[in-house]
Image (cartoon, rainbow, N blue to C red; front, side):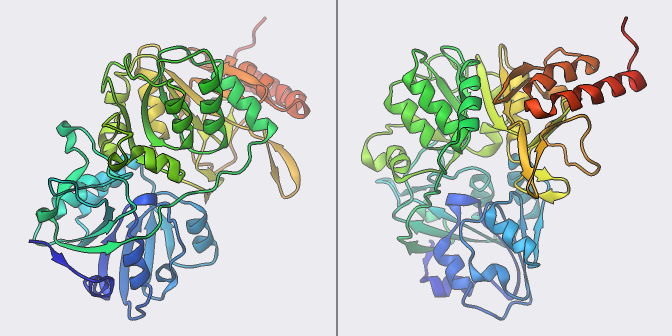
Length: 444
């Protein structure tokens, strides 16, 4: 039988030299992390996580090192200030594999309150924690700590993949919490982002199955689709956010034409407003198993993604070169975000019948007060490529769309230069001529 502890007692389960893992974003056990932050006797506590949601003092204490699989603002700050924060290059699916192989001595997560049958769900974050946590509960060499939070939505999955739940009797230790749900603030969309979103919508057809992320562009795409004559959409997405609400409430989602997981919208983690969490929570009677949370190894698996009909994957990039290589997670060698699930969905869309992978890139950025082009002849030395050229399909900027599928290396620049800011097109055209003369055959 599981043992109920108060947060102070639970924090003492972690030794001064230990290994601890917990999930990213909404799955992070805030009450436990707050109590761990009151300790100062750490010798060598190693933590693996991602996308930290709060700057707990624990992460800055001597003897504590953090490895993150996905950088957000907190990771970037800790790294910049010289604390022991490092990045692990890994896809989102790789988090699950790593945790299963590594077998961290302590694994903690947030769970929903139990349902009538005694099952807690992993709520808005089955993702990469579901399988490792369930397995660790059965392993006598590991300790699991469940933070049962009354504000975590009760969200089921599919029975085939564990239903996103675990029975109360299977737990090791648990604490109770009423911490509020994470509600990130999305900035106002600007005109550049609006034009990009409008170009994306022009690529979407009726009955498409959608993968949308978080941020101004995906939310605006959803808003435009909700107001359009298009519909009968399916959803197969790593992340769902507030854009999903717009489509759901507009009656645009039917999930009737997907080809896999028909009848259900599936995701692996959710991040948005209280309205989104209320919609997902089965206790409120709105979801009714229409929206399901599955493990990341299922949702982000290109094999499953590719079985969706008319699949449309919408992601973002930072920079692209004439070859079609896309940098999405780092600026030079400086880690900005993470590998995440982008390549998984790009590959799945690439392999799907009539699939479309769309990468949104703003044509310019401002670096040290100077406007620079995000479309470049060659990537700077040391650039970290997130999506290789052989998987890239649609590139969208505020100036238009280019489909690089089936386009040769010599012709790709000609497709990309019109998407650049007008200020840089002549310079890019000259660079293309120079490259063509040196590396490509001369065309008469």
